[in-house]
Image 1 (tube, rainbow, N blue to C red):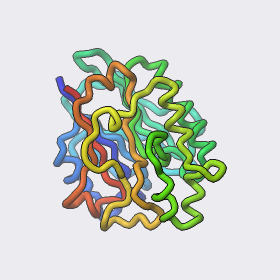
Image 2 (image 1 turned 180 degrees about the vertical axis):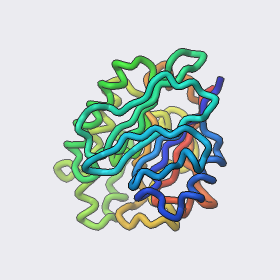
Image 3 (image 1 turned 180 degrees about the horizontal axis):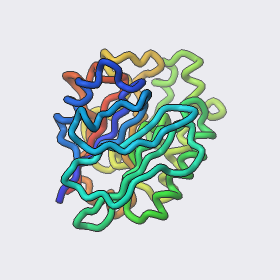
Image 4 (image 1 turned 45 degrees about the vertical axis):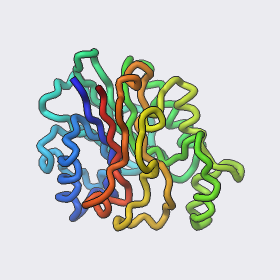
Length: 248
């Protein structure tokens, strides 16, 4: 059984864009969708016909997961650490065994906090067995030369992505050291950047890859395709583009 996974930061709860967001999701027919910035806890389950699982946040915004009704859910909850936003998880049954999927939204303002949050997520997935981390990680990857792009940002936003004056990829580098695999790096095609969209706002961004799927090695080996969804309503549905990946 193949699986199609999506991660999507819908920007401030979606507002009057919820219908468009639902159509963007439906257009890719995903089995599981990780959602970030669920301000006001919008019911995207009702919009999409999928089951919705939320993790609320008392400091930031809720995150959640949508799960297609044909999948058997073995468990669901929140990663119980003091994230600025939150981290939600579901465990589903697959022919290859149980698979845990986590939706996360890392701290937007400081890389040292993002690194701590990434460590919590890596530890959680290690305890679950096979799994995938999906979300807006608000951080750069350690394999790309980001210098020129960061220079395009206003200083107040550039500082969020710097560590002692250099591009900050501490959170993603930690995930790689803990054995997780960057799925887009493994099998991604097309444009790598996930922000900003052309008509969804995003004045704090230049072309950066902030949204990711990271998988445990055995699960990562089953992915055959990963790409950023662009065009049509995805250009205005949010300031982030959705990221979609498919297993064999």
